[in-house]
Amino acid sequence: MAKIEEYAPLVGQSVIDDLRLLAERLKGKVVQHINSTSVGGGVAEILNRMVPLLRELGVDTCWDLIKGGSQFFDVTKKFHNVLHGRPEEITQRDFDIFMETSLLNIEEVNTHGDIVFVHDPQPIALVRKKQENKWIWRCHIDVSEPHQKVWGFLMEFISQYHAAVFSSPSFSRRLPVRQFLVAPSIDPLSDKNRELPLEVIDKVLEKYGIVRDKPIITQISRFDRLKDPVGVIEAFLQVKKYIDCQLILAGGTATDDPEGAKVYEEVMEKAKKDTDIHILLLPQNDIEVNALQRASDVIMQKSLKEGFGLTVSEALWKAKPVVASNVGGIPLQVTHKYSGLLCHSIDGAAFAIKQLLNSPAYAKKLGENGREHVRNNFLLTRHLKDYMLLFLSLYHQEDLVYL
Ligand code: UDP
Figure 1: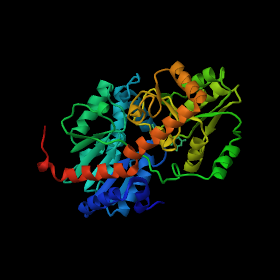
Figure 2: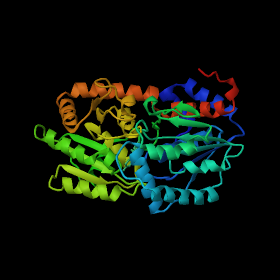
Figure 3: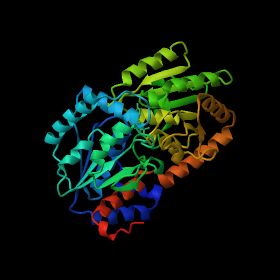
Figure 4: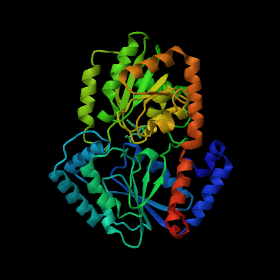
């Protein structure tokens, strides 16, 4: 695993020096991250890299998980969907199930950190254990149009935190606690994003029976309706009428996402007759994801709703042209016609893919611009700095000037 000094050639030595200075100021504090899964999805992706780097910098950091059964995760997935604005029925029983599991976790999870950093709604109720320590709630969801009842329920907990963190200005809500805007990030030196030798890429394609005889369009995502895998296939089918190409839809499932298997079946059903559509159920294997992204001519992220969409930065970092929906945190990453193409519909996605496949020089330029945009804004080093500044600010509240 890469050491902090290895990031200097990518981001500049002064960035690394700043991180060391900030970490020095946090000596003696324990930072405890808490979420609901160690595998799958963007939160786990980030913590897997951030925790070891904070430790290397000298910040005493740990990462704990809450526990829950299938009923609990069914409810939290429903909460996730309705907070993103998707209509679903929420009953009193859902709130009861949420609280039953939350009370068990309140009993069992030792919230010993000086700073307890809670990710997303699943562990939100742990704040009932607040004592002298500082509590941060980190929201990774686009809550710009949330389900009122669920948001109201969560507000009872959010208002007990010292601070709330959102990924994008458009997600922030009126809250009685301090808010911070911190965009997520990718790790340029992880297996998911580092340079790969061509042989490795070829081997992965061979493993999945994919031949590079025509352009490859790819979307990597959990099998989740909000990622619109069926819409991706429909856009691809429109493109294929004009340009001979192939589609890779690849994804695994997350342990806190019970819908994956069902959506995977729907996608298989939609794709079954077309041998140019490769539906891959990926094992948790970062090098394979990296290889598939690097082998692609166009990368899609046709989400209907999105928190941030790490896959977009992952693609841009590889200088790939991206077609992505104008939702959630995606427009932070893609400026239309500069660092990718934004779309609003299946037809729009198909049009954009055709444009990129027909104009390789334009596609290349968008990818290159995207890589620089990610270098300046969405690498892990920026994220580490933002978080350490946030931690320090919790102890210097009196220094803040409120506007
Ligand atoms: N991912 C993966 N394997 C998969 C599907 C997704 O490694 O089969 C990764 C993907 O590369 C990205 C993360 O999981 O790093 C998903 O984060 P994103 O913000 O795109 O979406 P989320 O799943 O958090 O909604």
